[in-house]
Image (cartoon, rainbow over all chains, first blue to last red; front, side, top):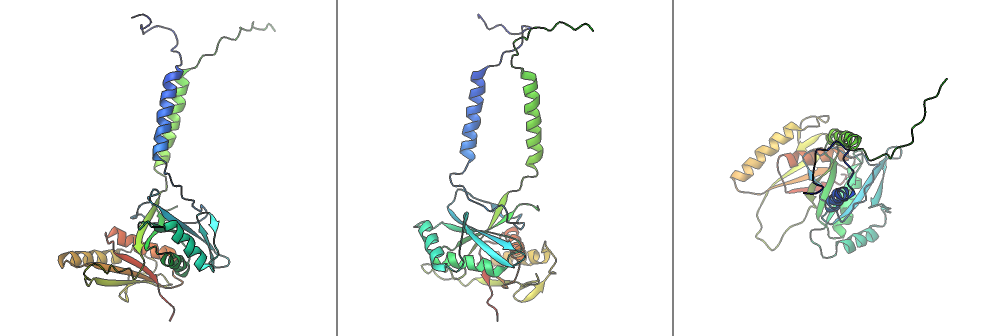
Length: 146
Length: 147
């Protein structure tokens, strides 16, 4: 066949078309593994280890509450996704969570708290979930020690 | 000194060999880093008082695991292990026994984790992790009111 002879001494030329093919396949791969819902996590929180938990399901609808811990004041700070919450506005938070939940019975509350945080602050977040009618609670932890 | 005559720049074509070298180095880097990746896991619980009234009520074997401020774990107020014990093997053994007993007697095992207000979240997660390890799913979490 004309032009099909291989084994020549010349340098193999770079083909743009197959590279674009490969790049498109990679793009589709990354698009498929990326969740449609991106949870806004607080990277400053030192999570405890929960090696036997299940891998976090980012595709299932969840309200994410980040609870950071200030060691100097011994107080917790709450964030719903990346928005800071006023812990005294119990009704407002519950209303927002209820609106997010809607009619989705599988909607869950995902708690990401600092390992030094006291249980009473976790309880407060659970109360908001309870007020909003969310009884599926999941606690976040890391698969291994930091 | 006599300078060597400079050659005219030839057309620098794309070199496949160095690209493969670089790709292999990147691949090795990702392979090594894959082992150190930290993934977030989750431990599922429910809120207490979530009773399904439509179904016939079964009386479950209810166990309360207490988490004290000091880190001491108790099963129905009996201490298990030490406050420093992170693996909580004693609790795991007890939970495995209870799970087996519940399977044999065909009853539902319901665990309530009750933490003191000032108990650390890490300790609560240690307990929930042990329950996940023992494959116990009916877990509720509550914080004890101060007396």
